[in-house]
Length: 390
Image (tube, rainbow, N blue to C red):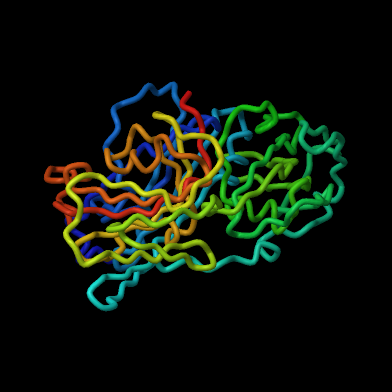
C-alpha cells in the first residue's frame, strides 16, 4: 500500500451504520494504521450503544493510491458453523469509483460514475454432484427439510435449482428479500433459519447473493453446498427468493421547485445534478421529485437509500451510492440534521432533493477537518425501503 498523499484523511463516519435484525455484527479490515477514508456517508457520530444490540459496521479496506472499498459485513449470533452463511450472503464490497463533473453555461452539472451491471447468470456457482444429491422437502416460503448422506465432502461451492420461480428474474440492480435454512454438512443438523418468521427486515442487493441466486426468478428455491473454511465447517443452505424490486425510486414524478437544483436521471436511475448559478438557501430546503406510496420513514427507522451528494460551491460529487456499487442503509437518528429531513416523514418509493447549509451539515468542527467544512451540500436521495426501530 502506497500511503503517500493519504495522510490527514478522516472518516465522516466509520463505525455504526445501521441496526440489523440478522444478529451480531462485526467487520474485517486490512487498512494500514492511520489511513482513513476521505468521505463517508455523512452521518453524525453515534452514541455508545449496548453490546446486546446487533449492528452493522463499515470497515474501510484500502487499495493503491488512496482508493478504497467499503466492506459491509453482517454476522449472525454465534451458532457453530451457522455464522458463516449469513456472512457470505450479506457481505458487500462497495468500490468507490472516480467521479466526474462538467460545466455548462453558468450552472454547474455533475454526475456520478455508475458501477456497470454484472451478468448475474455467470455469477452463480455451478451445480455439482453434492448439491444435486441433496433432497429438499417443503414449499417455497417455509423452512426446508433436507436429506443427504452425511458427512458430505464438499470441495467447492455448488448450487442446484430445486424450484424455478415464475416471477421476475433478478439482475445486479435488484434488491431482494429472501429466506433460508442452514444445515451442518457433517451431521445434517439444522443450524438456523432466517426470514420465515415475518420479522421486518431490509432487502439486500441481489449482487450480494449472486453466487447463490445467479439470475433466478422470484419464487425460486436453490440448495447450496459450501466447503469448510479455517473458521467454520461445511454447510448446506436452502435459499428461497421471496421478492425483488428495483434499486431506484419508482414514485410518481412531481413538478420541480423553482430555485432548487435540477435533476436528470440516467436509464439506471442515477441522477445528474445541475446547481443553479445563485447563492445557496440559508435554510435546509427539501423538494420531492418523485412521490412514492410505500411506508413512511419514522424517526429512528433504518432506511435503505440510493444517494448522490454534491457541493453547491462547485458542483463536484463527493459521495454516491451509485458509484459505490449498491444502496446503503442509514439510521435516521444518526444523520446530520439536514439529511434527516430528506428521510423522516417521506414515503418509500420517493426521490427527495435536499439542500443543506453548513449549519445543518458539518459547519466548523473537529469531525470535518476536510473539504466539506463550510460547504452547502446537495443530496438526491431515493428511499427504497425502511425498517422500524427495534
